Length: 279
Image 1 (cartoon, rainbow, N blue to C red):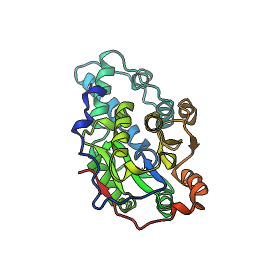
Image 2: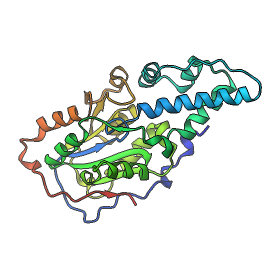
Image 3: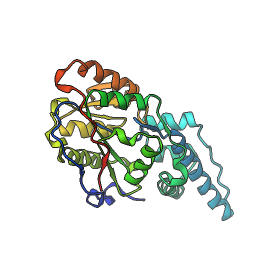
Image 4: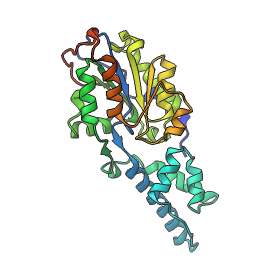
């Protein structure tokens, strides 16, 4: 099974490039992808079901019946949101010993494969929220451990790509599911080091995400954080990491920032500079 240390961000797409760097002051928003923008619960549950079935069929083909208990989606997703490890999910499904290792390997093999990505859905209110951020004059940067080419395709398909100034993703398809904190910290730091975002005011920079990795990355960068409960972590779990704010979804976060910045004269909306990506 791949370990977090097996994935090197140095092998990821090169740092942000902006076609025509502009000195923009004011609000800068860094936002995660899975959770805040898209609901991945159906894909994750289907992955669980497929991996469980694959292990069961493998043993049955050897003449070893494997009585398993498939969790309901509600049971499964509650465990994921409380960040119970996949080993515990496997145990509660009836797997033991080597069966668990096979299950974990299969999950990581298939969870981010293109054949399952169609199950992801855009979260309600995302377009309104992103448009609201842009109307505040914000620079908007997507910072995600998802494979960059997948993210770009989803944004393009849903007509959202033009709302971002930059998209920071990774090359390795397996990283997103593991969600290593140190990788997210490094990715956000690299985004903040690039023009024009290196000139943003840390006082008016925000990291929005649905996991502990997003909160800790924002805190490490010295910027405010907004944790969202619409994704893969519960509110009780997210509170352990002391985010600056906790909201249900991106729309609620947009209301929060709009109330803070809409009357600030220094944050007048400037002309959009288009979506630029790490290439």
